[in-house]
Image 1: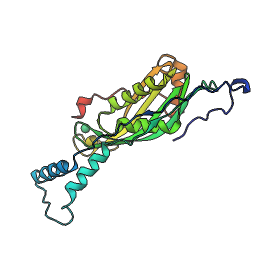
Image 2: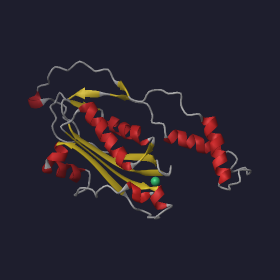
Image 3: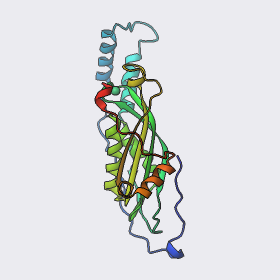
Image 4: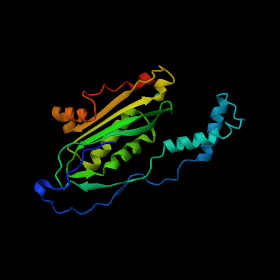
Length: 228
Ligand SMILES: [Zn+2]
């Protein structure tokens, strides 16, 4: 992950008075968690229905591992969203590139993995850089489709920090496309969501795609139905 650095001093070297700190937003609420015992029983029934013999030393605990693996894939780690006043008046793009994406296609419950590039033109508030990766994880760790994931990351950041412009690009390989169905091994799906100045201003948009390493607007959204 790389990111543009913020200048250490304010505009013309004058630092405005710091704004009052905001209470961090607890983004993932503690929950009772999944019912692992029920998931394990269901996983065992599922595998047996597929004709898989669980009476071997190697497979005996597979339902337990399956249940835990899916529980982990559907549980984003809690984090507090910390935003800071944009005291320096920084007005250029801030970009986090190649944030890992690990999600699960909700149509087949198979993983899709890749990277997300998130960039914004700050308004009055900026975000701790590591939080961009946490926001990606927040929406990835659930049954998803890539199009919705991309939009949810963008919409959520738009609501939280109200940037002047915002861009999210997700590139991912879907196991449901590579190991079954069309078996299009190596095919990448690219989705994008652009808000504000990154949507309306050609130069800003071009700069964003250049900085994330793509010189053109990504290919249009794939028709999700084509993958079923
Ligand atoms: Zn799928």
